[in-house]
Length: 138
Image: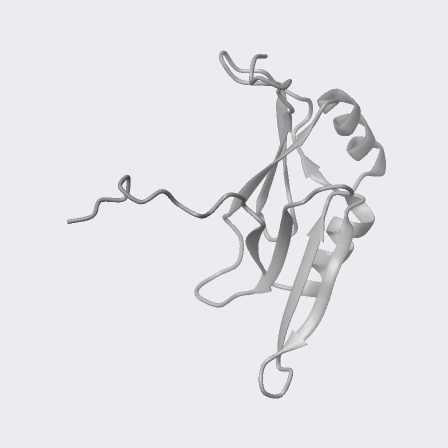
């Protein structure tokens, strides 16, 4: 019998994380206009083009965030982590923009990097985390 460790995975990257949102256009506006992210894709699919696939990402990011209408229950409640080398500066930038549900200031808990959280209009959480230097030390 083969176990998962007998055959190594061929997966080597997290390419897309999916958030369920109630209004795709409002979510695009939030990520693009408030957070300063890029719209990487916005296309219709399905037999009659009734479905929509939208991807956004911070400039330079390889991974993308897909913004999907609810396919199951209610939108919201998922989270992703994004990295920056300047958590304080990013918090200051977002605070100055306004209209973003974010924590009052970055925090550091024992054993964790400096970070803060923000919520999109559907209460999905984006955790902005201090990027660890190469080698993983803090």
